[in-house]
Image (cartoon, rainbow, N blue to C red; front, side, top):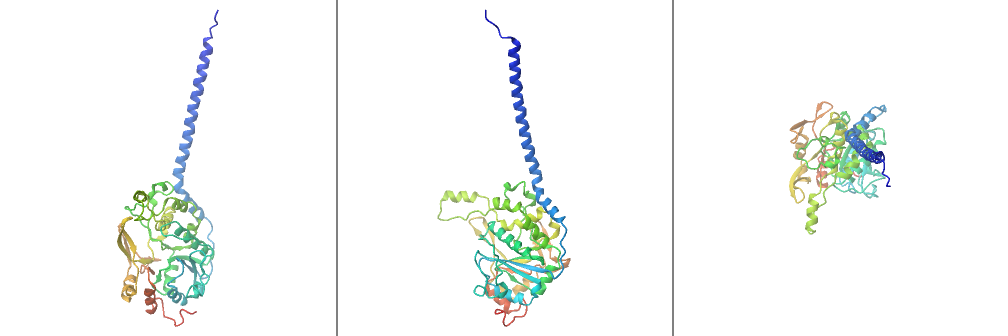
Length: 383
């Protein structure tokens, strides 16, 4: 006689199987919801990390400073400073307690009596420097190294970034009073609806509504310089997602050229500073313009179609009339924002530009001869 399995045993096994299957589904859904929740939390909180750090920094007690405030002149040089003779005349008429000089040049380059005509630049190169390539994050790295070096002197209260082709348009006294009297940084910063450089991969850490464009030639108050140096969030994102598209090789592989053209194109130094300060909710602490003049001309390239390039000033361009036209500019119009930026310093109407680029040695020599930076001293290049 064959034994029959009790019905309750079969039913119990089936229930147990369904129970564990249901538990697996519930566990999977729970894990998914947890991960989804964490991602959403990160998505919501990431853009505020920079602002939180700024607020935390702002709560620190401000270190009192007593003494004469300095302007730190930060030079970004490819190698030497070809216009050092003009800058020598500029600094020669200044009180040495009111300025300091820092130069980022190629690694290993030393400023001494063999490499510069001006003793003001002797030994002023950074001990630590990097090789810089235009349109790459190494440019931002070099700027941050300059700021880092200058912040070590507590007397440095303003920080002016300059290129090796920049010239001063006024004497030192005028520049010093203009910059020191303003409690704001001078940072070119604007929205460009037509800009295609924003990489969606930057989101949500850098939201598109905080993406800004502007000249890299900035002037910072000390607090803003400290914020730039403290940034360890936005710069790594720029380094990863804001890259210049590789240049086309006319003799290269056609398929490779087509692939290169599809790559995202971004110029980090034209976006990093204004974007970082905008994300830090500091727009109200800025004069949203640069104090370095650049003359732009449009030219066509195979990379981006029509593209703007800075014009180089030659001897004829540096005439008294030409320099006066630059000095007479008292406002800047930002077409993409329909905004006119009237130039002020500490509430007073002022000329917009204190410096200009890109000047050739012959153009700089004409400025020196015409006494633009002050009286020409006979031994200007020998002391």
